[in-house]
Image 1 (cartoon, rainbow, N blue to C red):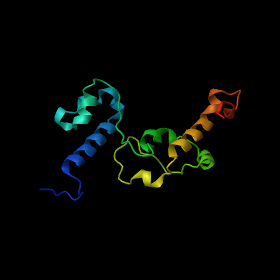
Image 2: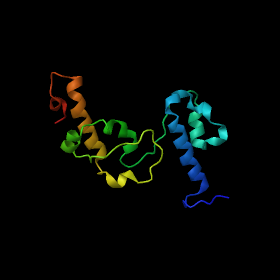
Image 3: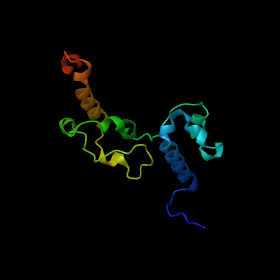
Image 4: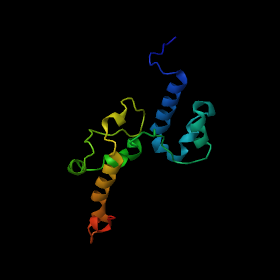
Length: 139
């Protein structure tokens, strides 16, 4: 019989595995719920699956909301990250499987603000090419 060395309760590990399996089926999009039996998912995941054919990816809510923003964050050029102060990270994780490192320990408390400014600076010229972004910043 295999032993559990993780120290986490089995139900918590079951939840991590269910999230990882769900997210790895990202190409199935809104049909991924059809891959799972009702007892394969936690109660909270089952509630989402019971909504029907919805395309949902599960990510944890962290202080910095890194996993929610990571698809945008990793599209930014290095020079933009240096300009606005978010740290340069080697690479993201898609689809999200598990956060074993505790990403919030490595990010500044105002990560979301820095990311918003960096993203706006990057995207603004493509949206409104005739005006400077600072013309629309509140005074």
